[in-house]
Length: 166
Image (cartoon, rainbow, N blue to C red):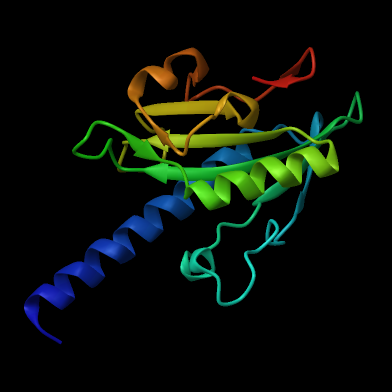
């Protein structure tokens, strides 16, 4: 393995560790007395084998969460980015995957939220945390202003208010 291969592998391992720390941090923000979660681990309407989009890695629904007092259920997709890309945007998923998320949420009649972490290196207290409802995501590539309304203080727990994840 060459130097650059080793460097790339180290970066990918570090990114994977950050993603895992972020996911663990997010799950701790759902107080157990208010929320129950069940690991979903199911693909969202995978593309037919051999189609152009089947070569795209598929994200999976991470969790189906229940708000215990109301019984309301919702899905969360947990995603971490170290920073905005050079075009000052974040790509949540492919266009095909976004369509699959939309189709699944509509068929199941269940809201879906992208929980997005941005920046932060150490134990994910993170720099920025966003809770984006799928219903507001019209394109998989989002500019910074698309996140402003959905900013959450990273150190606070999640809550369910008036049928929405806060």
